[in-house]
Length: 136
Image 1 (spheres, rainbow, N blue to C red):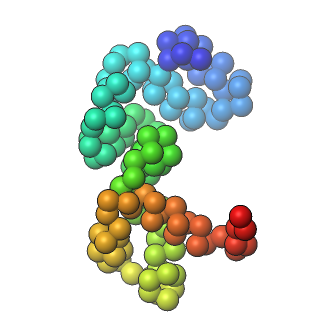
Image 2 (cartoon, rainbow, N blue to C red; image 1 turned 30 degrees about the vertical axis):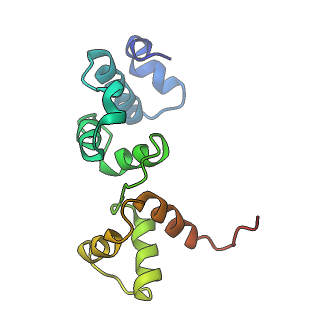
């Protein structure tokens, strides 16, 4: 569906597709932002990560974590550090501090060494939590 079609469908039709009322509202708001042109999608490739995040979090239902996941997985940005991600926090604590809980500030300092590849480091740290090693 195109954004205009999502708006025309309305929340009831979106909910009939299996979405909760809340998620239908979020998708509707995202579609509204696209239709109104308040999202500068054509410019995202040239925008800094923080600028794209700031634009995305203006959409109801999109928080910083969701925007960061979008940058990592959809835009393939190599230097995103999603410190709000509990898996990443756990992996940093396990791999760098023997499982001891540390502050986000401390995690940020550790992650500074990973730039400009903090997204890649995040992927590896997530994988470090997998109970079964992957064999290739």
